[in-house]
Length: 88
Image 1 (tube, helix red, strand yellow):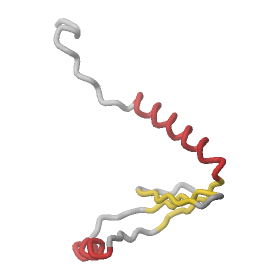
Image 2 (cartoon, one colour):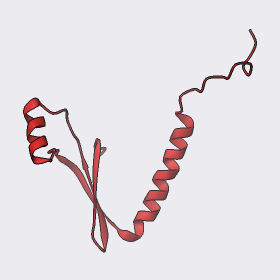
Image 3 (cartoon, one colour):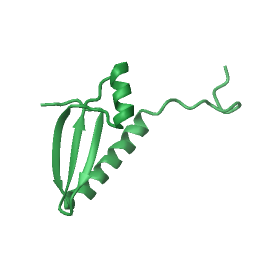
Image 4 (cartoon, helix red, strand yellow):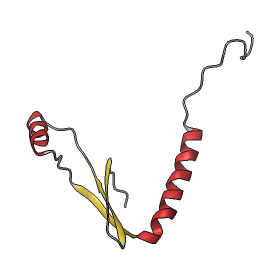
């Protein structure tokens, strides 16, 4: 099943990395005051994934490649410099 998350905390040990995916909701005024005083924003963990250290370089490479492809296909259109575009 697909799980939505808009925040990921990363921790590690000498043996593995733990990715904790959370969904952070807009905070109420009271929650903002609490977060400011405690320096903590509470968010429910939606998934926690533990990965062996050896897998992390492959994961990083896959994320970088997918981000490159995404950026190339979703870039906002660039303005055409004067004199370089079609003449109407």
